[in-house]
Length: 340
Image 1: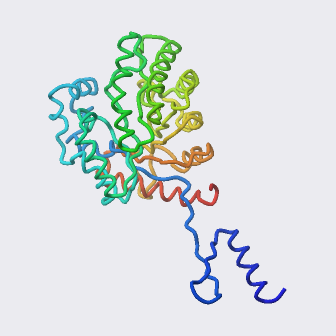
Image 2: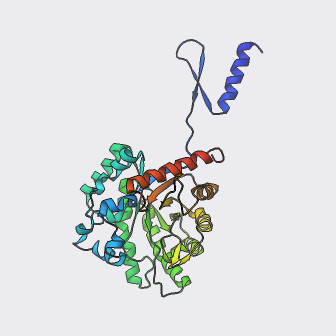
Image 3: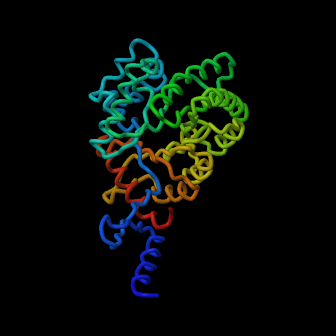
């Protein structure tokens, strides 16, 4: 083997280690070009991270959640959407202010616009213009998918149809819903009812190629084994979970272990929500171990979007978003050698 052949063999072996060979446009000299490696997970931004800027205040504190849910369905809706941020600007802000190129919408910020073709077209255009990916729509205040009354349950399912259609139009892969029922019923009864409503919605969403995701979002949905049972009862390829780092309070003072819960929900996960509250001087979240959580997420084989959902008060919403992003990036860099 001559010297030239020996050098070529070395370069070919290097290519196997992640280096791509490109022949030079002139002459016989070879050049090595490093191919960028895909990140082990991608980062998106949940619109709820800016809820004070969009609403002008925290609606739970201002109105109470039950009253707020009533108001958004009435002509008084504009009174709650009184912040300085226009919901149409969300994708632009995500990209220009935070350097994030994927977003997760919340239907409460355009609750009366799902069937407004001009509005939805503008929402999509602004994301497209910025090169921002629309990931999902989080849906609330549309009724209980596990309502014990069959007519009311069917109505709740139908209320979500427009959001499935909106998600398809925007290019999202999913909508996030709530597996809520009557808390006076047993856990088993609630699971059966929630599964029935979810199954009906999945069957509708299947033709739109939209997934129906359930978040641990309070009540029994924050009891991970209960939500796992619901997933199994639904037994549809479109159903899945959206594990949230923070929402594991089943009832006042009763919490499910977040690390155990995330591990149990991850086999069904089609998206993940990185809830954050407060940060210490080193930039770590003070109530949970992000590295430990992301190891659980990645161990489950998940490689999709992890959505920033800042809910703290110690930092402004923009600073909280940036702090969460920096923490996720630091964790991602630290785990990159362990996962691929």
